[in-house]
Image (cartoon, rainbow, N blue to C red; front, side, top):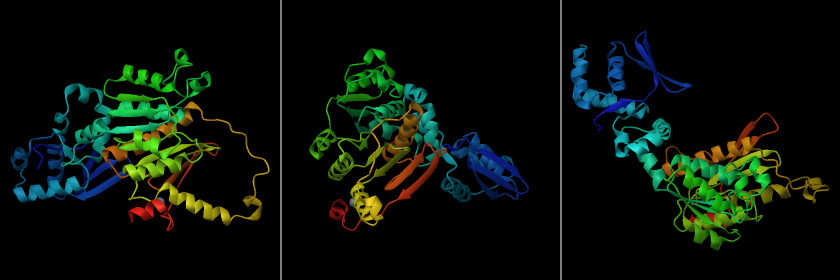
Length: 362
Ligand SMILES: [Zn+2]
């Protein structure tokens, strides 16, 4: 077991024969502690006293416990998710610990005695992301990935920076107007951190073969583009072949939405497309006809909306890369209605029996 088990930085109350632990801001755990020994042990664990000193320190407070009893209590506390390895960060060099201290403390929420926050950060450092799109969603995701210390991001986009992009694409400035976005994004990342290597690809993705080629060494694919129209089906098919998950999302009409697919483990995008086709056939006649008036194509994504979407999508990406906690959007449509007081909803979809992709891996 860990040489220095430490209580996570959580609130603890004691009294009336019990202790109350707050592993989350809104989650409390009530534990019986009639003789007060648990409170004393928690105090020692908060100080991260070496493992071999704990029994003697408890004895000084008048509590004689066996090694087995102590080990059992530590195991229970670890299973409750309130302990971590006090020396875990030592696996990282000092500059990394300094730069990424808030990232490490975030991973603490999911760490335990056997799984350190440093190991989750190291997983991010080893990761390679294929990011399709360097627009409103893609640039925000790039910024967050660089801040998190992800090792490599291949950014694919064919566009050049335009003045209208500056409302929400914050890696670009006036000086970059006219430049291909991918090179400007690469320069931003270089200036911001040496920890992430950005590989620029000035191209448009229109077929599965291109995604396969660009994503050959990727750990995850991010779809931050909405054209061509079938791009999500293209990415879906490519990710089955690559054996990696993908995260996608965007703004449509008045909603932000995102979701993810883990080929072979979650239902896929093709499944949802088949469900939607079936649902469309069941609509009333008036809705099955072409729209009488179709809305013009407009982009109404403001900076805050793009940032919100990027934050949520990047958190999902990081769940896959670090396995800190399970994905929250796997085959689950997460929706935020920006014009209705940010009403949030989420709807999971099931595997479709006729899905050619999921059928092949059954
Ligand atoms: Zn499927």
